[in-house]
Image (cartoon, rainbow, N blue to C red; front, top):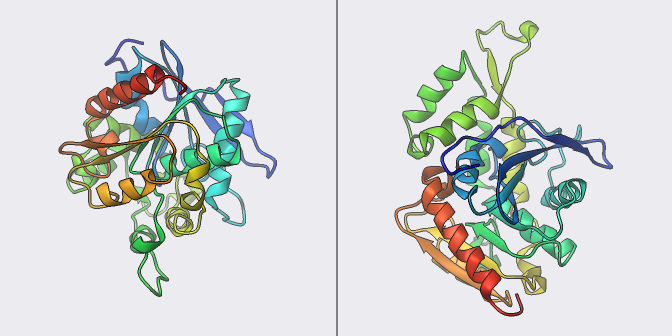
Amino acid sequence: MPAGSPPDVEPLCFVSREDGIDIAAYDFGGAGPDLVLVHATGFCAGVLAPLASELGNSFRCWAIDLRAHGRSGRRADGDLAWSYFADDILAVCDALELDRPAAFGHSCGGASLLLAEQARPGSFTSLYTFEPVVVPEWVLPPGFTEVPLAIGARRRRETFPSRDDAFVNFASKPPFGDLDPDALRRYVDDGFALVPDDEGGDGATIRLRCLRLDEAEVYVEGTRHTAFAHLGEVQIPVTLAFGSSTDAFGRPIMEADAAPLPDAHVVELAGLGHFGPLQRPSQVAASVIDALGRQEATPGS
């Protein structure tokens, strides 16, 4: 798949989990070592298709819809502990018979990859994480009880009359307005499903696949997982990238995450915010290629 050609965003297969959830897995094509891509909270595999296109000359790219996102299922009880994300990633790698692939994760996706490697050491050759949600204890204020992002997610608009209406709405305001148009189009095309005819009385024809209450719960669970406490157990090379214009997980947090990791490298990408991989896929792809190539060249990694 040459750089610049859009990959197919239909699931390659669904991987059934012990709790009855089916996880959507994707083959984004490309040539080279296997690279698994994991999206951020509220998004879906499709938004990383432009990034995969830029990586296609260097890696064979695979992707996953985290549970309750995209075309993957959700538990009836609404439990969205991030340990499930980690287990689902490992299950997809096993089902696709990927032998110690490299992996890229954005935000929640990066933290989920670290949790996966902690749960089963040696599952990956190396990780590239863009602002992973791995928060040192000192970041959370005393008496912390609520997550601002969760409050916003509960108010999120879930339905639109059409995909074009949704695209125009998102393109007109930050942070979605700052996204690469192809990434935003993938979000609208793959992150929304048609509303059943018997539920469309309000004029809505599409609805978010990741329901706003589920998105809010994912944000809450992001403060409860144990990835930071076990970073020292991750023996593989890890890149911790952040955008110079981020309002989320900047250098202080990335350096705090890097400190306990035996083999970590912190990278700052100029001009990007927290949504960097969706803002400038080509810039992030160049950094991924450089970082993973450097890790492969390091003796003993």
